[in-house]
Structure formats: C-alpha cells, structure tokens
Image (cartoon, rainbow over all chains, first blue to last red; front, side):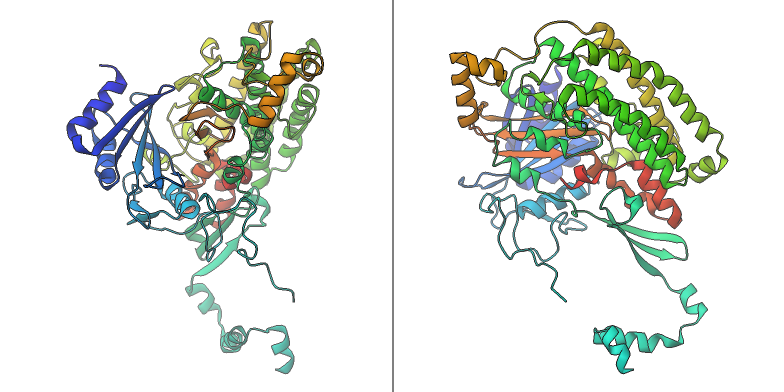
Length: 163
Length: 416
C-alpha cells in the first residue's frame, strides 16, 4: 500500500469522525483533525508500530484573521521508519484559543509550543512550562497575530530607566 | 552606614546585606547558588543566557533563556515580497549564509512548482557545500577555543577566509551573500571561480590533517571532552535534535540522503555517524563531515554542466538587469514582479534542507498574493538548544561551556 494511503487509512479507521480533511499539495500530505482529539491522535501516531512518527519537527500556528475559527495549529511529525513527514492541522474552535499540549508525547514540542504561545497567544493545556519564548515576561501582546503592527506598539517594551 | 545606603539604593538589598554579615565558609558550602551565564558570555556563541543552579561546581539544573537577538523575521516576512526576504535569510545562520539562501529559494520554488536549470542547481550545491565547510570551520575553531585550544581558531579562520574570497568573487560579498534567486542564482560561476574552488580544495586536505594533528595529540583536549554531555539516541530524537548532533548520537539521518534535493542523488557520499554521543564525538562528527563535503565538492566540480543559470519562468523569476533595460517583455515582467509579486498558488508547503547546524525548514502559507501569509522558520539551532538543559544537568560548570560549544548553536538562527 502506498505510504500516504496507509497513513490516511489508519487514521480514518481509528479516528473516523475526527479526521476532517485530507489534502496533498505539492506532495506534502496534510491531514486536518479535530482539535479536541489531538492528544489521542498524537499518541497513536507515535506508538502505533506500523507508523512510528517518533520525531516532532515543528509546531506552529496560522492566524487567519477574518475566518470564524481564527487559529490553526500546525504540526510536522516525522517517521524514521518510512522517511516521511506528515503535517497535522487543528482548527481551534475555542475562544480564547486553547488546545491540548503534545509535549508529553513528543518532548521536543515543549519549546515549539512555548514559541507558538508567545507569538499567537494560544494556550497549550497541561504544558509543563508555558512561558514566553522570545518576548520578555510581562509583554502584553502576541506579535505574530495579524492585528499586531509590523512596526510594533510604542511603549509596549519598557526601556531601561535613566539613572 | 549612611554612605553605604547611597551605593545600595535598594532598601531590601541593603537590609539583606546587613543581615548576611556573619556568613561563614560552611554557609557558602551548604547552600545552592544560582548564577547567570550570559547573555554576554563569550562562550555562549552570541546572546544565549543560561541560568544555572549550582551545588559547589556541579550544575543541578540549567534553564536557557532565548530572545536576546529576536528580530521578528517571521513577522517581517509577512510584510515583504518573497524576493525581498532573500537577504534576510543571510542573517539567520550567519556562519553558513549560502545554505540559508539555498534552502529558502528551494522552499519558494516548491511552493511555485518551478525548478531551476541544472547548472544553477549545481552551483547552488557547490556554494551550499562551501558554506557548510565555512560554518564547520567556525564551529570547530570556536569550540576548541572555548575549551582552551586557542590556536585552532586561527587555523580554521585562515581556511574560512579562503572560502569567503570565493564568495566575494561569486556574490560580491564575503559574508552577507544573498546569492540565490528564485529560479536560479544571481551570477554564473566563471572559470576563475571554479579554479579558486579547486585550488582551495587541493590545499585543504593538508590543512585539515594539520588541524587534526594539533588536537589529536592534545591530551587535555581529549580528556576535557570525552564522556561529557552524553546524548543518547532516544533522547536526541525525542528532543528534536538534527544535523551533526543527531548523527553523533548514532542516527544516520541526513536530509541530503533522506529527501534528496538539488542533485544530491547524483552524488556519492557517506553519512558519518558516531555511537558515543558525547562532546568528543560531536567534534569528530564535524571533522568527518568536512571531509565528506570536500568529497562532494570534487564531484560537483567534475559533473557541473554548462547552460542557463536562471529558469525560463518570466512570471516568477526576475530577469537580468541588462535584459530589463533593453527588452520590452522583460521590462513589463520586471514591473509586474516588483509591484505585484510572484503570486504563488494558494496552499502551504514545508521544505527542509540539511544545513551545517541541522535541518532548516521553511513552512510557507500562501494566500495567492505577493506576500507570504505566514512563514515559519524551523531553525535547527533553536531545536538543538533544547538539549542544553538535559545535558548540563549533573555536569561541572566548566563542562557547560564545552556542551554549548559542541551543540554549536548560532543565536541569529535560534532567535530569528
């Protein structure tokens, strides 16, 4: 069975109603799943002996600005067994945005999720150490959201006081 | 007392200092100490800050803090055209700039669905490998310097300088090259450049052997690194480590082999690995990879075909300036690309390339306009730094320097 079909079929057999969309643009297999099932799907992808997606390469998010479900969280996971990268997408329906962490399944997601929280303000539930990654503690905005201006917000970053 | 309060303007601190005047040596020995290493520490390779909790000289825990060099490239990318972003890729991993240029344009080309001509791809391969050599020269040199072998950095930078002279001739800049273009490269590699590469490679072997001799016979260097900062196979995968650091832990994963891009499938090369996963293995690993890159470069020079260096895709690639000034068609396309952008189809792609530090990935989301809707840079240094906390736990404070040096992070890339 071709690899892409195998992955899609396996996911569909186990999480039928949670698999919302499958696309294959430029040879990148991308599967959209329900955001409340992400933890189960992550565990399944990692532990299933026929899949073994053991490495999480990247977690990020997309801000669609005007869409109803504004944020999409994107995961890239890799299987050494098949030499294959799979993209998982979750459209977040909650407001304020939140989703289960996958850092308990893939420890590398720890920092990626912190970065995503920092940049988009998406809260990862049960994350062991959800602090800002790049911006200073106490910064009030989430810079990669579309409403944040490219030039920044004057006064949002405190400068050292003159002595 | 009055005078003191002017020095310590903080009331609380002053009070604490007054309370602590009966400190004995036992107090100091029994208590843990928190120290701040960086962001201005010379051995942290840029502005990495580590907060270390120490018991005597043993590190109980280490917390890396990033963001001191955060310039917001992902935000800036959303506000500029695909072509405008090429110079910014130089500033990611600033030790191996050409590799970033190549990875970025390949990601955009994947999104556009176009391909550069074969000669352009071979030139890209050549500069990527040269850049890898340059980056590994910095990595090896500064690493040896961090643990006390200062001569090494002079020797490696001497070799690196020769590579930068080649870049200077090819791209017009030694450091911030911005040499690749969407659909090709900026200028052709002429016979003089090719000869410069050849001459460089011919003398490089003996220089490498010299460097090895310097460190191989150095008992202090070996003792300092052997068995320090051991990263097991499983942990390396779990923490998302890529590149030489992953291979030094025994996993032969190299994007050039796993998902061959450019023409790496036509090149014969090995993927060196080490089982130990300690600081010394990571040092040998880089040395071996340099030798493989030299092998690859000889093959590239042999196989380099003649032909065009820019794809014939007038809607996506900028024509050469001489043509824009003399031909109507090119002028119109130039106007359209500069003003409206290259407008890739709606969709998203993830492309990753093997960089000196690991796997550099670009995740680009396009909404069909001239600017990317979102661009995520999956930078290898950022991911590799996740291992620092684990590796430093239980190490001595002087080993922390060796561990950071062996992971070889570049903060320009980790902080984006």
